[in-house]
Image (cartoon, rainbow, N blue to C red):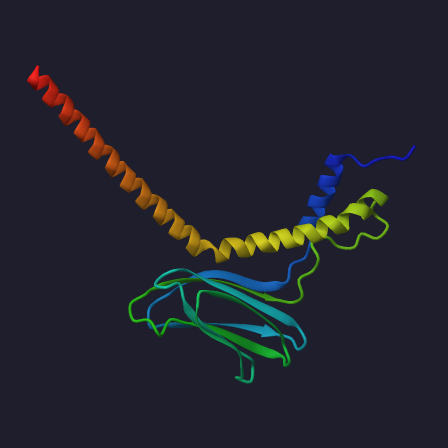
Length: 203
């Protein structure tokens, strides 16, 4: 009779593997970008190494910002204007310090809050190759769970970041709706109290 791996042991194994997974080098930051200002960041990248930049304007104005990336030789390899959010991936053709900048110079009064995630290196799989150290059962379901978890983590992260302005808009809408109906409620209550008072006066 073949042995089976308890569900709790499988979950524990999965969590241990997740904790041991190596992450690519990079930086994640949320910063303030005043009106008529520019902020640049620098990262050294080896030749042939891939890097990616994801950014999102969280608050301010029309939720837009200018962004560009330059290689160590000063060549512009990415440029976008007045973007709410975007993603850029590139494999370094030369070794050196790459510069990426965010500009709010087109705005004279809107202060912005910008989030970015800059990662250097190919993203490793969440679950490493375990070779012969796992049972046939885990060998069967780990690749499927790994693929699902990678897609799920990536989608959740990007969805939260990209939809912050929409969530803020929904929050404002709900607040206005609440105030509107609360005002209507008190208006109707005043009418009822006034009506009851006039009836009592007549009697």
